[in-house]
Length: 412
Image (cartoon, rainbow, N blue to C red):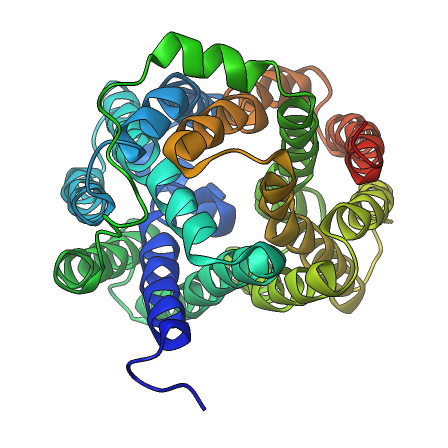
């Protein structure tokens, strides 16, 4: 048993708080994962416009990742995380008014700052410091899997609330969607002060750097071969995961499912995150994070290829099983790929900066995939556009598997 005063209890309790924060902050930004068609209808925007909003979010992320690492090395993570949660909630209130497309671009850009600049590197660095070297897979698996569990619980409540409001005589899609947005805002407003009051600053670990040379540190990090391989693993793995955001529209437009049916399937996929992420993390510590990551990237790529050629006459059960399999594998990839950071041997004083650099490269798909998929799906409407999109992403997954294999090789 864990003693309330033990270091292990402190580490796991702090990890749990970080998990809840990470699980609460992102669902509003990625609401289209479960409600894409409903968003298009309620906000009176096109699919291309929604993807441009996502691209705006990705652009801000890309710009802010390196500065976010710099901030994480110098300022209180507790304050950075609490501020991020509060800012995301306040922007959510504006989002709930269902404003114009131009306002949505501003909201998504501001969300990128709130969750990318001040949240991202700070929470990854905290977990990397909390975990011992032989616990990296476990802790990052718990981070992503636990975050997924929080998101799945919230999404289950959200889809239930959405369906209930729609079932009422006076219910409408926009009214139901607004209640879902209010739900996520409320959770953020509760979690923000909890993080501020209960999360440690880790000042004894998270050394405040004041006299180092940013350019020199950046050059040192960029010379690390392992940093680049880690970034390639993440960019390929994240593309596989990001492709699943399109499942909602893909199933609803091409298989004739209702918004509630599609929402139920995609929410069920979210429940694969704690299973896939945590299991991959534990197996990674038992075996090798790089080996497990390589295998998962291959399997995820193959399963996405299956999704591309799913017959139109497939039953709902078959669709559900394929979506769950892809969810299990892609969440396993997400749960293990940050564990490869431990093999890069980056000191704590520049760990935040290294995370920022890797994130800028690894999460670049957040910016360019919407710009690729939107015209692709317009040029090749229907199933064909999605098939091309999914096969391109699958091919990239095999590249990531090879990068993970190289990381697994002994350092020369």
